[in-house]
Amino acid sequence: MIGIRKIWLLVVLVLFALPASGAGPDGTSADGWGPIELLGRTIAPGGKLKFSYAQSPSFEAAYLNTVVFVSRGAKPGPTLCLTALIHGDERNGFEVARTAFDMADPKQLAGTLIALPAVNVNGFRSGTRYMPDRRDLNREFPGSLDGSNSGIIAYLLHRTATKVCDALIDLHTGSFDRANLPQIRVDLGHPRALEMARAFGAPVVLGGEGPRGSFRREMMESGVPSIIYEAGLPLRFEPEEIERGVDGVLNVMNLLGMRAGRESKPTPAAKVYSRSQWLRVPMGEGGVFYPVRKLGDRVEPGDQVARIDEPFLDERFTMTTPIAGTVIGMAVPQVVFSGYALIHIAQP
Picture 1 (cartoon, rainbow, N blue to C red):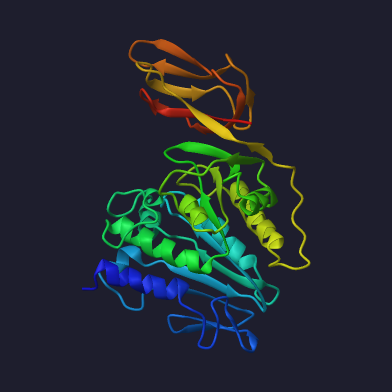
Picture 2: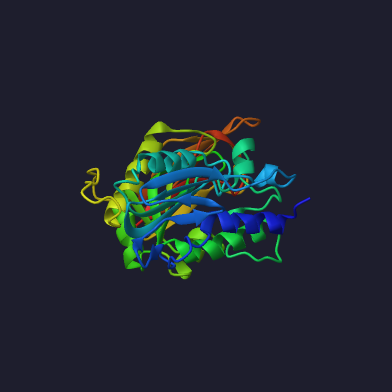
């Protein structure tokens, strides 16, 4: 049986193998822009290929086998990487990555587009957020070869992605029956990443380094400009959020010079927020939650944002906001308990 470490070493070879013989680290050769080879597959300039990383079946590969999309532009340029389904239940990102890749004509492309549309493929199949070892992969980066299953995967993905990606877009949705207003999350102190965030075209740009151990934060600290697109609910395919995400990816490709002569889709200027806060269920006020505000609403201190009905005692709790800001995320109506995050409010 092939061990987990050996399988993921194969992933490294597939995803981020060096370009073909005679080529430099940017894919160029003495003769100019050339093909790249990935696990015995050659992608010539102007060509694209979708393939599975596993060359032979195995017990573990059945859980880990995912797809890799590579498009080699006809002209030299940067490498943009797209990742989705780091959380296996966040399905919108899969369609964003897949559709944006299919729309990128390699004969008109400058540079290379690499998409990993289902990083946590087992979670995608089963509708599970976490990895097979029940860990959150997006808290395991940069990982370690001596760590858990998720830690090994995080290490190999991070180590190799930092070598080949000139820019990264990581695709997500809300979590645990929470919906996110379409938004880009970015380190506001990094000019190139902020430029990507503005170019994407989402209505909200939320500043922050991201949690320690997240892919985006660790890639940024390794020198790769990175942004996250968050939109919609988990366990769904939402056409409007997918379309907006695809447009955003293409807009960033325009910014990077990968789609020469292609205009970005007109979008309103994004509102930039520097911080945010979740409003949580107060102690002892659990029950059935109903929001009274919508995503995108502006709220002021003292405004009612939700109610919670106590079904056994026939009581009603009213939740108000102590802060002003814009609602960028919220839970859907559901049973909630003390401390559960309900309303996400962004502030300038």
